Image (tube, helix red, strand yellow):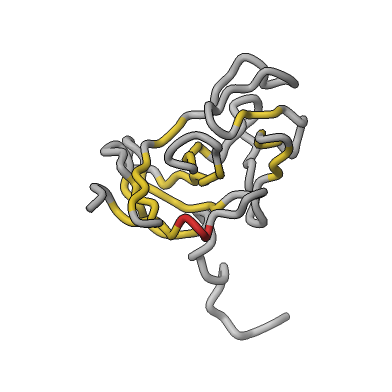
Length: 138
């Protein structure tokens, strides 16, 4: 059995897109992470959902853009290798996405990074309700 909290089944990670989830980081902050397919074992990688160039979310809720085995930043078009997280073009060239350790066993992806605690699928704001509980409209 894999160590770590189960995140999702491997089949839920799209071939050309990402699966977004929220975890608590080493500083007890909620942080968004994305799972993307990778041709190297174990077939998937987890990266921070933030472009290091200007704190742009790579997946804003409908999956990150993937082109030629690279995650594409929607703001400036930098490409991050899905397996290494490295960027070799665009404004983010020379940077690498922060990664998170995973384990895959029997088709299930587990968070295997002691620095992070899985909280829920989706983004940091996905579980927030309306800004007001009032039923009045003006």
